[in-house]
Amino acid sequence: MSIRIATFNCENLFRRPVVFGSGNDPIRDAVLADFRKLVDILDHRTYTDNDKTKIIELLKKHSVDVSQEISTQTIRVNETRGQARLLKGEGRNIEVRAEATGRSAWVGWVELVKDDLSWDAVKNTARVIAEVNADILLTVEVEDRLTLHRFNKQVLAGQFDAEPYPFNMLIDGNDIRGIDVGLFSRRPITSVRSHIFDKEGSQDIFSRDCPEFEIDIDGEPLWLLGNHFKSKRGGGGADKRKLQGKRVAKLYRAALKRSAHVVVAGDLNDTPGSPPLTFLEATSLKDAMTHDSYEGPLGTHGKCTASEKIDYLMFSPELFAKVDKVEVERRGIFEFGTPFEEVTGPGNQASDHAAIVAELDL
Image (cartoon, rainbow, N blue to C red; front, side):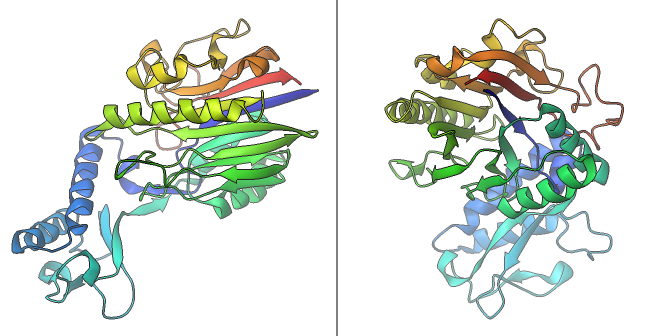
């Protein structure tokens, strides 16, 4: 029996934060840095006068004070209805309400403004998934489970006449930007274990989650541990990734006690031999791209050089022994040398990540 298992960082399916589409790394990084500052300040138990000043400065800096028709707004405060609000006033006259004395005094949150992806980008994402044609596909950076469902029915099957996936699953993770780890499967998903509450001291371990999906393969369980490690952008990324790598290695060893068929996959945001990866490399896991059948560039991101290998499909020894073929689908990336002819620029590329797929004889 042949089965195809894959991983793909889709960079969202229908909508994504506006700043990620800017095409300008310094601008994006500056917005994300301010976003993190604002999240941190708004989480204070008590707001000082300086806190309130900084809140307004950051919001105005990111165009909260202009009309929506011409707004270049990238950050906004999502407030619930009623009196428990953070802000009052409009335009340049916004200010923090006197009653909003700290985090517990108002209801809402700050978020990155999202916009629709271009239809061409959506179709190119579907083009990659249709070409990969995996039976089990880990999806990284997707909005929510209903988005998986709609993309499956309306785009994959509706536009590409691809075989739809009868099963999909996603549990919202810890990332307040709404980029989560999900699964498409043509085999039944029989259970899911989430790790959004795993902690090291008081610190959340996973930036998103490490969901463990149990998949029924003709009566035999296969466990897939899906991941999206902390980005290298922003502070504390290296330490966070090490914490995540250590925890995933432990979860992998525990999963091996349940089944000899275990997969660890996703965007680990670091290269082979880096400290976070050493925890996984010290286990019995085997990287699919080291299989004898694989030929091609070593990278999975951007121009796909060896230093841009950050996406992984890793198998337990028993599964790795059953791998027949490994391929990496890079034609959805504009920066790569030979993209699909429909990929004409960064604005309509499927993703700046490649999809990795392995075919196994089970």
